[in-house]
Length: 426
Image (cartoon, rainbow, N blue to C red):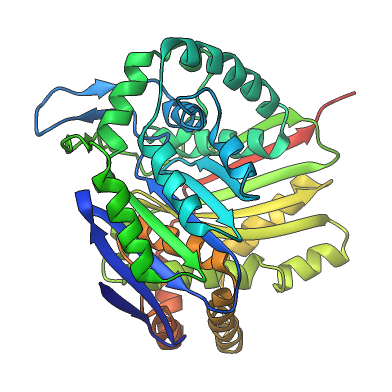
């Protein structure tokens, strides 16, 4: 078993690639009672076209199928559900599907071995059939109808459709009603047999556990299963244009005041001489300094009573850095003008940089008080880099003003999308 040292925070994450090439990460915290286990599959809503075993034929499955399988996987062969099982242990089980992956997780305060064992069982040994698929279609379609009335969801997915031409991020994670209705048992089985393989998954266990017990339990569980040969799927890559689809879109919804998303889209190729970890840190620092909770702009807009909320964040989406500002206001025209002016004149002072870096280091250390935060951080790092980031504190400490200014100059603020969700007219 490999011991991975997280430098600067005096923590160890245990790692082992067990039977069938399942990567397992374990972080032990002796000061808590609970255990949080997350079994993640590298299959999300964007993975709709793929080929197998080096062959040229592409298979195409309906949009939303990752979310569909997440629903189906909770059914047990005896007619019960995984939720029923965990209720008997007083544990909490849930799952979520994102653009990039699907995650099943369990929080337990006792008998963590039984809880983890069953997590592996119900995720890896499904009991799909046509009757179940048809029944679940109605449940998912009902969920879709409810989601259409959720303002934040409507704004989020409309904004992504404004940003991306070809990337499947321009579609909802659940797919459309037509997608759900068109999903077949054959589609479900193809995806499950292709992607729900230990080699395409990873397990993270955080809490008061013995790492060696975890590894043995997982290996024993996998030995009891008939794991098929891995099909080595290759997901189709799309060439995305650097421009946005729509620079300005207005929609309406059930909100009291306007909600706005403003994003600019920069190709990662522009930052080829900047370390990928540094780029994530620096872009976050820039956005936080200019549009974050303690920024001068937010203070000014709040004092003028022009906004009720503002935040900012960045995401790396395949070949692009997406920087986004979120606002709630009754004065969208005035606020958008102020935001666009700030975007053109972004800057970070030396004093602000040091303060933000110190705050980030403090947050990094404090995160290790919470087993769920650590688990989520490990998930994010595996998805972004394929492994753990062991020297984030060192990266933070080495950021210099010249690095920040270099990133600011390279940000492509011309490729900007503005999406407004206005209150529906009564």
